[in-house]
Length: 483
Ligand code: NAD
Figure 1 (tube, protein in one colour):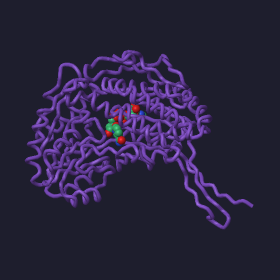
Figure 2 (figure 1 turned 135 degrees about the vertical axis):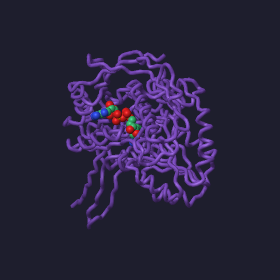
Figure 3 (figure 1 turned 45 degrees about the vertical axis):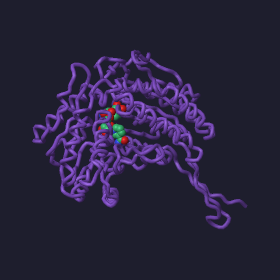
Figure 4 (figure 1 turned 180 degrees about the vertical axis):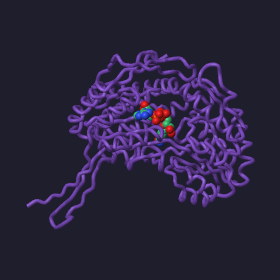
């Protein structure tokens, strides 16, 4: 096993690994329930030390030409490729997603770094000669200073990489405060950043919970806050950071609908729906959570879906035959179970019940599919973030669009159909930021923005793609006249 997995988790500040004596919290392996590490929670003094170090580093780093700033990122990408397997194993061990899924996450993270390496082009401004007689004008993009990232448990490799490669390539310094549930993967990646030759203080990692986040948001030297996590916390981060005068982007939770038209290819749609709803045990912000069969689609769809659910193998994430691993923590597993209890209590019909597949150790649940769900039920409204799929049957495409548009969240949705007109109408009218047509998970590639809407996003500029460049830079417009 990997040595970091039994050690106390450290902070990485100003180029040094630190083991401060702080309140420690256990990190568990979801497959076994065993404690695999202890994570210290940063005190205000740790936050202040990290921010000051990051600020000092920024004052040097911003003047390094962008073509030189991306050189450590090229090396970082190379090191990520070399250590991809170690990263995926660590990720799988602390998060519980299958090894294949963990490898795919690492790949997605690497793609972020690849795009950030294009910063010399991405950061270019605009120019126009002779805006008035003899006067030329151009814009430049300048870094902000110390940027902060606060990230969730479900993508400990990729989500931080939506942030720091872009921020750093733009000339900022960065402090990552990853989820306290999965601190090992972000530390492993940060270590590679150091090996890639990044100057001390440009990249820092501290650990902790709410108090560390509050101290970061309130620190006068922090200029920008990027957050990914649940909607209540996203709202809090957005409001607090904005009140503190910071630039902020806060990506929140989701309730994603999968609409199946009667003309859909049932076999291929069911494959995609299985992956969407039960991939990573439903712990994805892009996971399908409400299945909406239109008209006659319901019968054949549910029959094929249940057959796949029965065949889905629940087991340890490192076993290649496992289709779905455990949930991240005992508490989260209990929370998901409580939603299943609510579904039953509110009158939905459990076609299969994930509680039947609990194991004596580890935080396992099988897939749950609820039929006869109505829009007013708790399981239809709230984010469950587990392997629970609610079926709401509708008669027409219009009904489906109205149902989806009445949802307060707007992260992603997919329509399954063989009719281009229905697909186009759905994509045009739907009030959701990321739309799939016959897709499992419509996750935008690194060069596009991750563009949730409504209660799934608070801010203006989204994560990665060109939006990240806008978020991590300030524009300056210069007008020039020579006599
Ligand atoms: P979470 O909101 O509990 O935690 C996210 C981060 O915020 C963690 O680093 C945590 O330490 C910190 N935090 C928690 N409570 C806080 C508080 N009261 N004040 C300040 N900081 C606090 O989320 P999670 O359970 O780690 O992750 C799952 C959630 O993230 C789901 O809701 C999921 O939809 C969402 N998510 C969204 C996206 C997206 O792109 N929209 C991507 C991944 C995950």
